[in-house]
Length: 319
Image 1 (cartoon, rainbow, N blue to C red):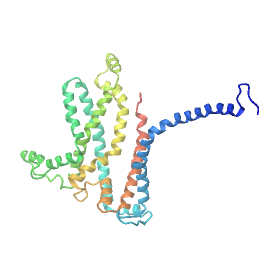
Image 2: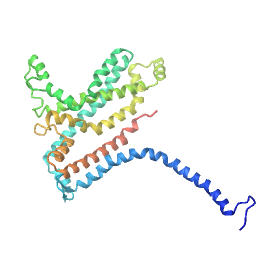
Image 3: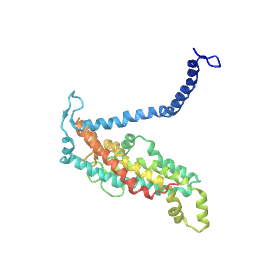
């Protein structure tokens, strides 16, 4: 057998040359795969708790199932077509539109106005006190907040009716009147969620460079011009974020208030599609119908979000 000059056989020499290459390739593999191992737990949780329920809900929307029966009856598109003739679903859609049209401006624009009003007193103790008062409802559980307002709206011993009686007005059945029940839910939901958006706007105003404000002031800009020409363009990313998240979550946020205050009544005047979904699935055990509603809600949410990114984001100034 031939021997190399170093006294080693060719096989041994070749093996020693290949081994470092294999180690290098394994090192590069693990180096490239390490980030994926770090994000794997999050991806698994998202797939298990978001994408799989969505896929399974889509599957269930084509079946008639009562949640406990071992068999599911395939009904095709019937769960979807049945919603067209369901008057309860029509009333839920009507309530959903009212909640969106009322709460989106309140939760997006009112915190912005409050933030601009509080900004001039940012170095005083007054702003801290206002922040605490306005943000405190956010940390309270929705059920607790709704029970507190349930006492305020009480037609006999409620605080609101006591003020009306002292002012010479008649009692109002706030939660039993179909003309006022939905507005009571809107008031509670707005009171509960305004504080969080207020803090977001205050943080955005804090991030506006002072140099821009000082330069504009030296050029003779007044307070209104400072807001419209400098502060507003620089906080539009925060405004856009608040707008998108509010549109997505507005009907979920009123669920707790509806459940405690009105149960969707009177005569389903304060219900919405999310509460209708809950009733179909967990009160009437119509899992197929509830799944169909959930898919429609998901599609509508995706569509509204796309419209906002398509037509609103173009007015956002990043950087």
